[in-house]
Structure formats: structure tokens, C-alpha cells
Image (cartoon, rainbow, N blue to C red; front, top):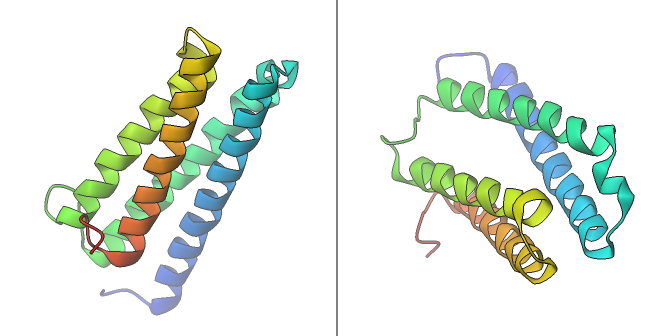
Length: 130
């Protein structure tokens, strides 16, 4: 890392904060989906996650650049990207595109497991988790 340590701390802190906000928002929207709440259809519920996820992606790219580690070069980061894509796809099925409540609930649970995998890989830097 060729930059001042505080820059990395700022980038990583933004990344971790947006990760927490992402999963908290997803869980809340998942609960609303399970309950059939009209809150899931509000403008804020449809817009705020995209704003946060944009900040999440930007901070991830910033952090990776500061570390000099990139997907498709570093296996653990590649695993995170694949896990993230699974989370996004499953989350979209859970909150929007699932044709039945059962499929949505299965996709919601699977998305949470994908998210947990991404976090575990981030912590261990090991795509196999052992």
C-alpha cells in the first residue's frame, strides 16, 4: 500500500458501514416481503438501497485499488465478486421477481447465505473458508 494509512482506514470504514447498511436494509425489506407490507413498494425502499449500494461498490473499488488487489487476479476477491453476484440475483428474486411467496422466501434465505459467504471470505481472505 503506497498511500497514507488514514486514507485506507477511511475507504475501508466507508466500505464496512455501507455493508452493514446494505444487509440491514435487505433484512428489513425481506421482512416486509414476508409480511406483504406495502412499505416494500415505497419510493424510499426502492431508491435508498441503490444509493447505498453505489457507495458500497465505489468504496470496494477504492479499497481494492489502495491494496493493489483485484478480482480475477486474487482468488479470494474473485470469490467475493461471485458471491456478490449470487446475492444480487437471489435478492432480486426475493424482493421483486419471485413468482410465489415460497420462492421469494427461499431466495431471501439463500441471499442471506450468499451474503454471509461474502463476509466470511472478506474476513478470512480464503474462498474455501478453511
